[in-house]
Amino acid sequence: MNNFDVVIVGGGLGGVAAALAAARLGARSVLVCETDWLGGQLTSQAIPLDEHPWIESTGRNASYALLRARVREWFRRGYPLTAAARAETAFNPGRGNIGPLTFEPRVGALVLEELLAPHVSAGLVEIVRSAVVVGADVRGDAVVSVTVAAADGSVGGPRGAGGAGAGELRELRGTTFLDATDLGDLLELAGAEHVIGAESRAQTGEPHALDGEPDPRDQQAFTWAMVLGIEPGEDHTIARPRDYELWRDYRTPVWPGSLLSFEVRDFVTHRTRERPLFRSSPSAGGIHYDLWHARRVLAAANFEPGWPGREATAAAWPMQDYWRAPLLGPDVGEAERAEALEGARQLSLSLLHWLQTEAPRHDGDGVGYPELRPRGDLTGTPDGLAKQPYIREGRRIVAETTVVEQQIGVEARPGARGAEPFADTVGVGAYRIDLHPSSSGRDTVDVDSWPFQIPLGALLPVRLENLLPAAKNIGTTHVTNGAYRVHPVEWAIGEAAAALAVFAGVERCTPRAVRADAERLERFQTLLAGRLGVQLEWPDFGPLTPLRRWGYVAEEGDELAGALT
Image 1 (spheres, one colour):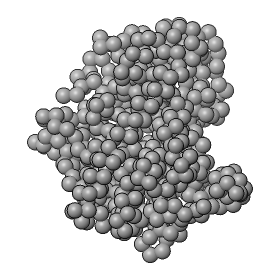
Image 2: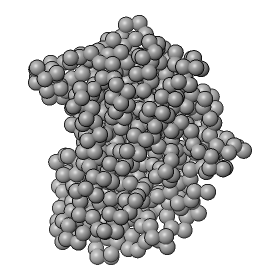
Image 3: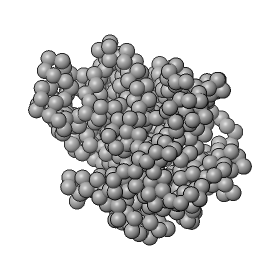
Image 4: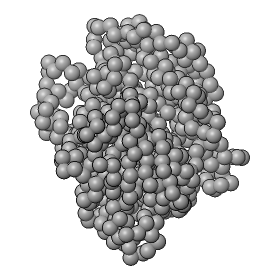
């Protein structure tokens, strides 16, 4: 059967949240996932949760809180935790500095499967794995169907099991279509008006927008993450990568020296800082401001002595950011995109080889950490690299509402006590405006922001009536995308998009008509908050706290380190 209430293209966190929300509201959806793992940036891209400091108690939807709880339950149920670790309410398997819940990507994929399993069994969710969208049938201002295909020529299983046979395409028809891909692939195929790259200050008025003309090639760097373990006394040195000499000798004005070093550029101050693999001792606050502890996904101290799992960390470090070429643009073809993707892989492999062979050791015992072992068993790959690169920025819709820096940025809102409120809010989020080095050669932008809301208008394309963004492709600018791109916000966007699709179907109206009618909008927001447990606004903290940087990006003695003031 190829007719669905909701067709969801993209199996990342936004896509999974959308499928869960549609099922809970009684709608039938199909979820097209690019790999065999659901979860996108959390799993197949190996990026542990990037979250705000209040996530344990507020600033998240009920379904996102359930995801976090199920992760902790998974470890308590099956892993040999120490008594102390088992008793921790906010148990953190990896004890990573980047946030309060860091864990191996493989477990994230398993937990997401568990969340969807009852809805798959009920026939409300069908999952098409290792598939990409290759076409869209658009009539007037509405999408009628999308066509998906797999790299190996088979989509959705054998004929007779609801999928296409080997070598065939599969057409998926639906009432509403959601684009939950990292690059906004369906937006382009459907002809939706969209933006690529950076806007100019003349267009948006944003303090940190570009001077001069907009630049579609000005896109945030992307990163090919990897998961590494450590096996003392063993040698796991990989073969010298093809581009090792290139990256060892590479120099750029936005970086202090070679990317294959422990010298990094501070994202906020642009000063040079040392960020070693390990620090011999923690800071006065007990935090190790080093690379290993940043996104550590398994911490040996949490497990019973003798457990062979040891430690592991997700390596998605500043020196792995690939900015030599963009992935999108009017003059970016498949060959250039493939070259950029391979370049990012080569950069991460080169960094690993350098760490194993030439990096100065923290203990003073010569150079190299040959004991570093790629943990392909935790990434589902043969080499320990993630299945996909972590893409921070793709196509963004031209929307009824475009969120700009003046609505969420602290510097851009002088005298304000918080972000601008949106009457059509469909969720909340909080993250700094954090822009990694740009593919046009621009340096980082990392500035304070206020906890913010997600406006429904940012989910509504200016023309197409039944295509909705469900990930990082909503109506933001290049600047504000730097705050809206993280895990809990992507989840909230996907959940809101699916709920909007189902609600509009029940109301027999377009998604746009929900926002246009105040009474209908109020009923939709009541559905979100009541049926789904969506948080629509931030609680009254008194004077709201802007998000300053925290975690491994700061260091001991830094006036901004860990500050939330």
